[in-house]
Image (cartoon, rainbow, N blue to C red; front, side, top):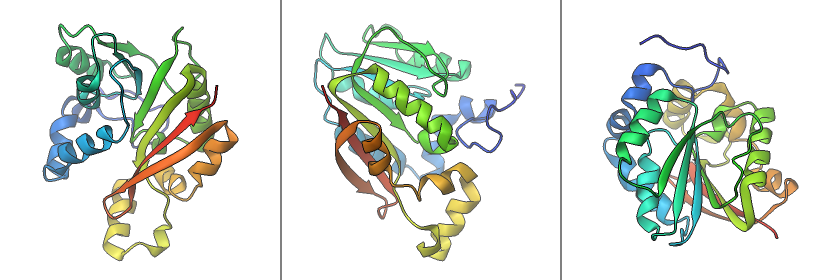
Length: 220
């Protein structure tokens, strides 16, 4: 498969066709099977209600959405958003016959309008892969698509100083993560989100506190 030109050359979240086609298997392999258990625990921490409408930004293959849909009742729904047509095929195959889950091919790094708002917006290991000015655009998209008192849940790296990491952890992070991630982990995301109108932050930490589920709400 021909590799498309990356929108952000230093980004690690824009995947090659091979990686996109085999993403779930690769995640299982590199985590020695731990990813599935971890992501189930993190999604349970979101607090999804049966009637919620959910937007999954950068939804990929729909693996996370398949877990979230289990919390929904008949009136709940989830919209997966991703740019990749390879991910779209996997998402739609996963949800064949499931009316509560739909896919929309859409860039999340530019302003867009879905014409509706959600109770929950979820983004998993995507935000760190963009320059800060692009992250700001993504946050505006979230604000514009979240209902009053809606929940924005970010599953991504927590804040830490790389210089204080154990040598092995630092080597793994700097070797396999993109330069944008180095910037992401040293920013105060509660402060950034507060400046954008989000409040009531809560967090759950995983993997020696290097990964975090950060939840905020938007006031009415």
